[in-house]
Image (tube, rainbow, N blue to C red; front, side, top):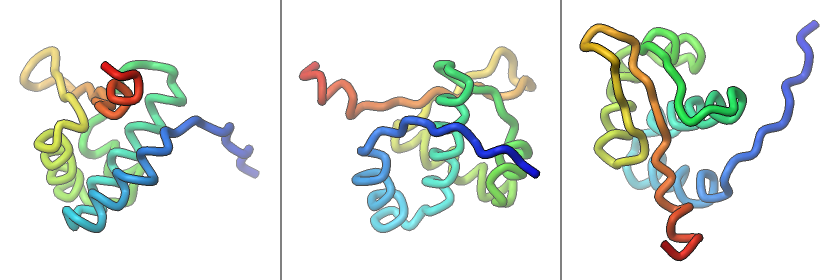
Length: 107
């Protein structure tokens, strides 16, 4: 039997605005799924970024690797994630760019 996962905190903006924007307006539900996967990993690991290959994300989300590649590209273009690498062949590190948090603080 699998133990129930602990609850995680998720910004209401993600469900109230971002989901409708990515899935409805942009017609990129895979981008929302990948964003949600990254957000959950970052929250669970209590980190600012996570390292994951396209294959790891594809396996965890049920998407194909090419769908993950397109989703990552779209999220980068929308400036919702920041992707960095230690070297050209290393596994990418993903950081969420939560621009709405700055607006909520009045910055």
